[in-house]
Figure 1: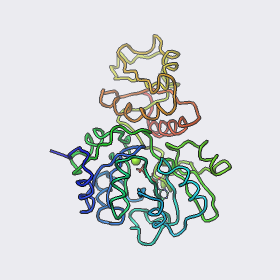
Figure 2 (figure 1 turned 90 degrees about the vertical axis):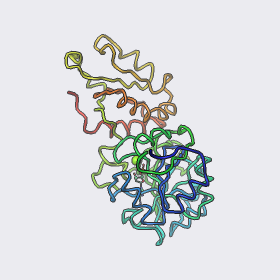
Figure 3 (figure 1 turned 30 degrees about the horizontal axis):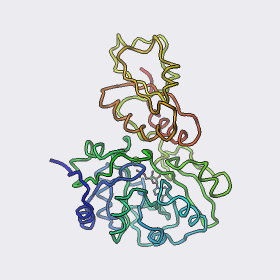
Figure 4 (figure 1 turned 60 degrees about the vertical axis):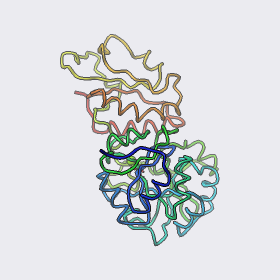
Length: 334
Ligand code: AMP
Ligand code: MG
């Protein structure tokens, strides 16, 4: 049978009040939501995703006042960033209030909070008396879902309800920054809010803490993450003396733009290979929106190896490349 997909906010609210799991739409990706102040409900999220408990969750709020109630400090920089970008794809990591379960924050003294920019989920949050813990609604390590069907395909047997808010407008996870009591803002994860907009608001370039850790402060920092089933390989490693036909490998190509496809498509590209273009015109926002759905499509197509071109390192291109880097971390050409 599996989860129902629908738009019934009363039903969703009721399930969440009972401590159950509901998938919710946001402008970034679909979240797997539960009462973020209820340890038992939150443990259901970790179980459904097979998520290790060292990986903390983001608490989603319906107002700035609610966000403040989850932190013991609300520095001026947090106020500035929330005013500029909420609701929107920016997560703030701040000193946590005592009543937040340790499971939510993976025992860190900080909590991650965000107000999502999706009318349905905002309305849901505003009628609940608690914040929603909501990591991406996919099995741990896999590509995030950007529509209700993606959630159903993987978690449909593990949850009761999927609120359908249509396809995600941004399609890539939130940008995460920490804000300390001295108003220092540090980038923890690249995401749907571009760095140019962020540094303009804080008035100087961000400090970055994006090194790859195996025990990361932010899970998005794991070397390998956001990975489809197929091996993801930079196109620069595509063997020019390709023998893929003989090996009968199912090969795919992920081009950032139509320009990339035209430039590289040649006689060595196997006939019948899958070719997808993230944005015909090379627009970073359109490409971000299409990224995860396209990675899933390669798996559906039965591709075992996908060669990809990088995005230009600007705007959301940086976040796209970050996801491609992690998706390809353990892949090698065969
Ligand atoms: P997901 O919602 O699955 O994309 O992942 C949630 C992200 O929130 C994780 O990748 C972490 O990077 C981040 N996060 C949550 N809580 C904290 C925290 N207390 N400190 C740092 N990062 C956090
Ligand atoms: Mg995730």
